[in-house]
Amino acid sequence: MNLPPLKKPKRRLLEIRAEIPPAVYWGAGVGFIALFFLAWQISTSQGWVKPIFLPSPAAVLRELAAQIQEGVLWQDVKSSVYRIMVGWMISTLIALPIGILMGTFRFFEGLFEPFIDFVRYMPAVAFVPLTILWAGVGDEQKFIILFIGAFFQQVLMVMDNVKTVPYEMIQVSYTFGLKKWEVLWKVALPAALPGIWDTLRITLGWAWTYLVVAELVAANVGLGYRIMRAQRFLQTETIVLGILVIGFLGLVTDYAFKFAYRAMFRWMEKGGQS
Image (cartoon, rainbow, N blue to C red):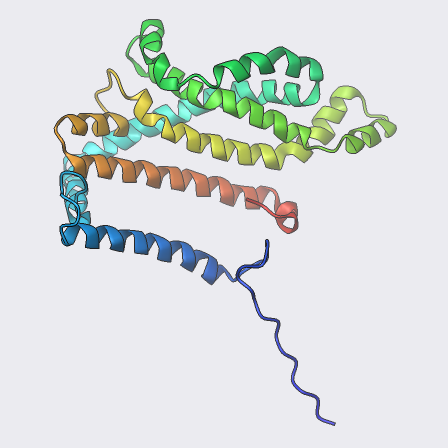
């Protein structure tokens, strides 16, 4: 008796959390970006938007070539990346231990959270005049602004990451004879580490959004400085180029964290990852 051939299960693209082929995943992202640039090209070439409001992609590419030839772009990127990484690292080094303590001990949560909740709603740009008085107009002032922009959200997210560790896991650890700090170091932190790593990725992205604010005053190099300077002369192609470069650098750091996540936490793949 001839049996009908087995039918392969159909892949549904809109199944909740279902895996899709990598080619479809990456193709969708690249296709959407291409569609965005196509719409940009059409809207400017057809004269729907005046160049003073939105320059054409060709004008931005010419500005890119000019900045590369003059060496301006490399200087701006180097300065901005340095400021971002130092400001974010200072925030991370302080936020990690405080967030871990807050997520582990209710005392520290009660001690720190009201103040952190109070300050995190204050706009970072409002601190620019004060930070100039405190630290002058050098890079230290930029570090403080980036710290203010990232730290208060970061510490609360780390706290929440630690809180996601099931309390039953901690109780079971005590039955094996582990002491309090051993439970924290050997059980709670390893379990919370994937979430903490994702928090670091997200907060580094936030730090990039504060770059223009950090370089708002008394800077003479940097992507944010270049954008603010171009605003005075209505050089919109320079503004758009700076925005695109910041977005590209942020995307690079984001995917670097994602690839590192997959390498470090392979055991999380079946459980889902961001």
